[in-house]
Length: 132
Image (cartoon, rainbow, N blue to C red; front, side):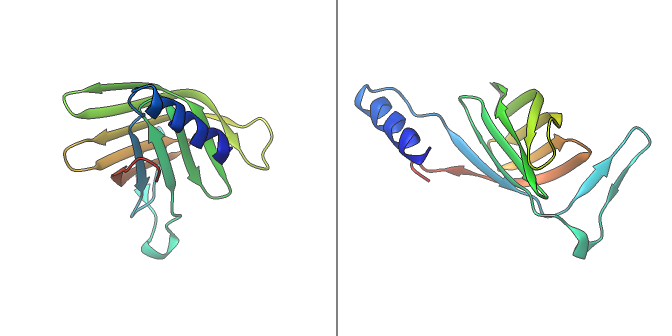
């Protein structure tokens, strides 16, 4: 898979095509929401999330023992970057699990928000340099 990504980056760079912009996000707190309310987990109970998304729609939201992964609709408006993925597969030992994923990043300061499964968490995000 790494070889494929490297080959695609090489092809894009030789044809003068811009590479997709990539972001990486992490959470400092864990928040769970349902139709009744939202509640933050205690400081020692936070599950680190690892989120990557690119302007070509690729998205991966990892928490616990798996990741919601796939292609999402991507849009940008007034410095707000938005990914929306419906029924993305949850890649883990749980066969057939799917979920809707929404990721919002404010370009100016890298503050973001993710909603995936029952998780609804603020994030800090960084723009990745090509090849990171």
